[in-house]
Image 1 (tube, one colour):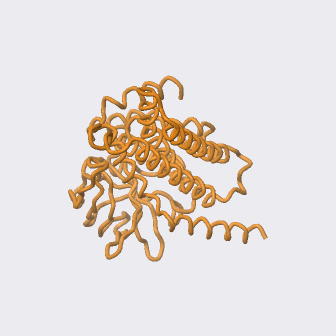
Image 2 (tube, helix red, strand yellow; image 1 turned 180 degrees about the vertical axis):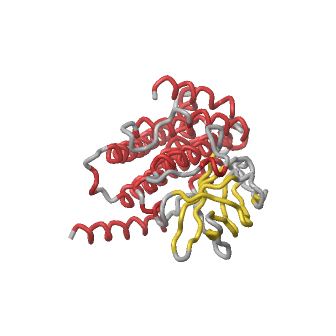
Image 3 (tube, rainbow, N blue to C red; image 1 turned 90 degrees about the vertical axis):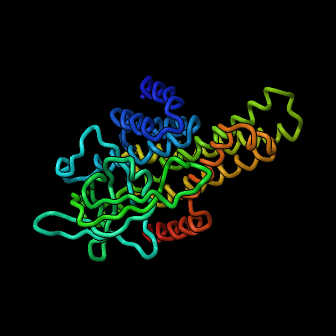
Length: 337
């Protein structure tokens, strides 16, 4: 990745806060960034972290675009992207959330697939050209590629009233007989190893966001001689970030190891995400305790970084994901017996 990654990170500051330029930047990154599992996963996820350390919102725009491109590389069958007008200029989202009272259904009619219903939590749907979406086909969930500017697509503008990631609007999208093309067989999207690799990529972004927040602590220590409490916070933050990097790097090594066929990918993903979520929340707490209210009230960039990271972290389901890890451990042990 080398020089291209360095140039992309240098360009992040130029797109900060603007969705259009951020999408163009992410599209350019997608032209050269590798997919996980291609031998350079550690470098890829460190790049994710470096981007988020500069701007959490830019990482939040980039990660799903690259995830969609990786999914399209991993699918065993050819996907007829031309049928929905997708090409190298496309910008992608991945919409797989489910919600109470709403459902997206796919039906086959006259040799083509049509989408009907509502998909919740669709980030930037009003700005993207295309998306990969999960829809119900009978009792199964199947992935489809769809043009978001097609007739019959209506992206809600809200409600969306956060203090963090304010420009990354995540709202429902409604589909009414919208043509789509299948991506993989029913169940493929959720069952493939790449699903879990994508979840770790998100954790790498969280870790980078936490590292960016931690820079305020280091900068404060350089401005004036730190006392024992400030040193204690600084040391605790460094140890936490090191633990997060170690677990992401270890996961990357497994992803790239051709001998890792026996790895339980759900365990690996949840272990990494749970660890990094804990690390990130520790960093937020240590920095807040060490620096007090001033940077949150007077430093716009720091306050935005904290708010962005706090909202992004809520993709982690807290104790529910701890329980999910426990369940995945027991299931993995049962398979080994």
